[in-house]
Image 1 (spheres, rainbow, N blue to C red):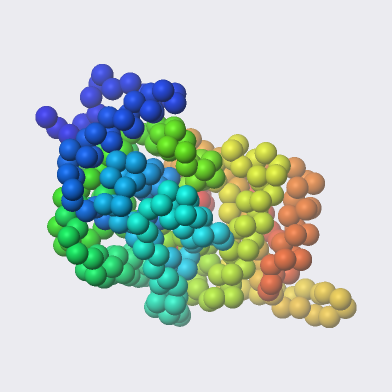
Image 2 (image 1 turned 180 degrees about the horizontal axis):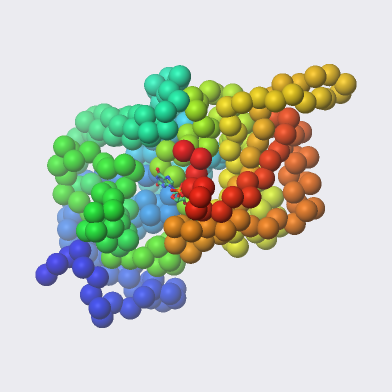
Length: 327
Ligand code: XMP
């Protein structure tokens, strides 16, 4: 039997009851596969890896070791949420790796987008492999592979392993409990497992994180401006009922400064660009038409709260010709 093929008879999971029976079935399968072995998981806090973590915690508890690598390019509050949900609430075996300086030092002065992505991907694998090497008795590697990853990998669009390809050389047996599910089904399962809504229904977030929203060479101060403005945008979208409605929304702080004036004095600071888009397949996107009042409020908050900013711009460009991300 081809275990990477979704059987035609498999119903689409849309209800809690369906999710609960999927969970029950998977818990049994995971226990059968793993026995009393130990399983390692790179837990980014994204939907797929979070759902896999919650499923495995339910099935094998402390036999799962989660590794959360903070590469410094996560959104505000994300590492804290991973620790709170998994270590504090689910009592998981969680290793938190603060690799912020390591990544930012390597990225310092690197302005080419592809080089930045490459460094982030490679370093992630290194950090993860180092953590794995410190552990004893691990025989399995869990991954949040989902069905579109398998389909795209079969069609040669992308390698199916998440997070830029996890260490093949670690040669563990794979545990991939959601590999036959589509994204919407993973969310229903996550909800049934008790994960918080802002983890289950989160917008897409690129692997290289805020790094691609800090175009050119990343500096710590500009990265902080991206993180703060992103947090403000998310908070305001949530308050205004847009967070579940708009597909993806974020801020970008480009690497140039312009003249402004504040309290009668000249300023020379970055602009903050807001991008909010809608799409069904991410091949073509349209721009969300934000209410003028909300734009006014965002402008005020960003200029008051984001150090180093003196303008707010809105990106009106669809895809094509612009991509969603700036790098
Ligand atoms: P683009 O910029 O290609 O983005 O129009 C399309 C969608 O893909 C996301 N994206 C990424 N996701 N790793 C990811 O996991 C990446 O390197 C990456 N680059 C773009 C982007 O956020 C959008 O949803």
